[in-house]
Amino acid sequence: MLVRNKNILIVGTIQFIILVIFGIFIVKHPKIKFNVDLDQWRSNYISYENKSWSVESGEIDKGEIDLIYGPYIKCIKGSYTVDISYESETDQKLKVYAASGNEAHIKANVVTLSKNLTSLSYDFELLKDIDNLEIVLKYNGNGACKINDIKIQSNSNLIKRKFVYVLAIFLVLDILFIFGDKIKTNKKLIMAILGITFCTSIPLYMVGMYGGHDGMFHLMRIEGIATEMKYGNFPARIQSLWMDGYGYAVSIYYGDLMLYFPALLRLAGFSVTQCFKIYMFLVNLGTSIISIYSFNRIFKKKNIAILLTLVYMTSSYRLEDMYVREAVGEFTAMMFFPLIVAAIYGIYTETDCDWKVYKKNSLILALGMVGLIGNHILSSEMICIVLCIIAICFFKRTFRKKTILVYLLAVVETLGLSFYFLLPFLDYYMNCYMNINKTVNEIKTIQKSGVYLTQYFSFWQNIFGQNSANVNERFQMSPGFVLVMVLIVGLFIWCSGKANFRIKFLTLFSLFFLFISSNLFPWDFIAEYSSIGNFGASTIPLEIFGDCNYIFNIVIG
Image 1 (cartoon, rainbow, N blue to C red):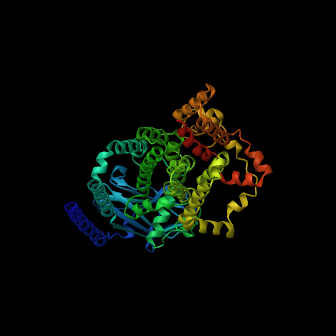
Image 2 (cartoon, helix red, strand yellow; image 1 turned 180 degrees about the horizontal axis):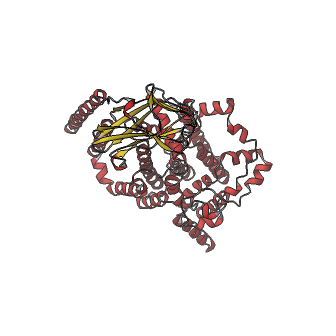
Image 3 (cartoon, rainbow, N blue to C red; image 1 turned 120 degrees about the horizontal axis):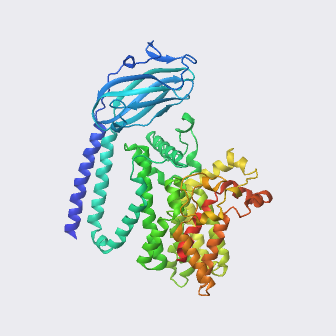
């Protein structure tokens, strides 16, 4: 043991020294500033006058054009920053090219020059040495526009990323060294986790990303948190990046507990797209680990836990939520659903356990609820509804001293761990004028957005689309072939007279939530004649009821 501890100390010291050296390189990394004057740019439409390039409104009437372009300078492979000082009456575009427009040699998107700002800092990366870097102002033909200055300099993004790579390698090696014996003992389980994570992350192994229904919004959230952390504002509450610097209280209403990690990666020199994809991979990994733990806690058999984890991880809506909708809050919340199910299962089945063992369910339930509240408040609402229904259905077991105590303990633990988010959320909701306070007083007709019955069995429907009235324009909303078959098997067992109470209850439960998610449930009627129902229609997306249902379908199996 002494030799082992000595080796750990030596390896840890070496790693620390290497990381410190990397840190010094990052701090002392020289920034190469290119001596580029604005008059090195060229234009076929305007002239360089008074140390600026400017165009008046109506001066050019040709639609979108390349107004100015240059400076065609030599740059080595690396990461760079462009700083632009400008004035514009309308939004314009800026594009960086390399090697005569060959985009294979550069990582750079088109960037918007907002009419509400006067400066912009923009990073790009060169993948090879070039001798003709080109920056183009794409003028849309409307409004006056003036470019006062453009500066180009290198940055330390590449070396910061290498620091993260080395840190990750050290972390993996340390885990292998410290927990080597446990890894050998549970190698089958670990291989299952890694295999399921790898397979469910396949869409991430490509250049760029789809964008999804909500992807751009969540990329902005990550960028907003990173910006506030760069300014020294922690935790980020009102992100100044939004609305061209006016800011938005996005972090007050949208739980971003898990988004601080990709925000840190953003500060470490990764692009926001890379940060998002790494985050999605880690969510898959976390969901695999939590699911196997939770299902093993329920069934006490690792093989069943692995199988159910595979089914849950590959469920149709979960994958669509990640890679088509890119709904960060929802697919992050799905990571904690199995934990909550395991806690509830323990609360209602571990009736004869010692209190010290039984009360662990309160902590498991609290951790699951904190994960929901800190990432997706709507999923928290849905789960609370589900828990209320379960408590009523099993009222004899619910209203026992031990059960009530463990629930109360879970509530206290949840509120204590979620206080950082709930307090400002409730403060803003009750004391600030917000759109939601207006919309809840209007009748919301959401029934038409419900899932069509046929869609539950449309296993090969187009995954891309929107929430249209036409079924061929909708995205896939089926739980997936396996989960639907599990439900059908449950019904078959019931009809054959071989179903026990658990199968009957969970089958009925699943059917109930699928009904709520469908367009057959009378949401419009409830919203018209009930203020509580209208509040629910104003705040609850129907598909999340389906999210809750998937777990119960799996448990039936």
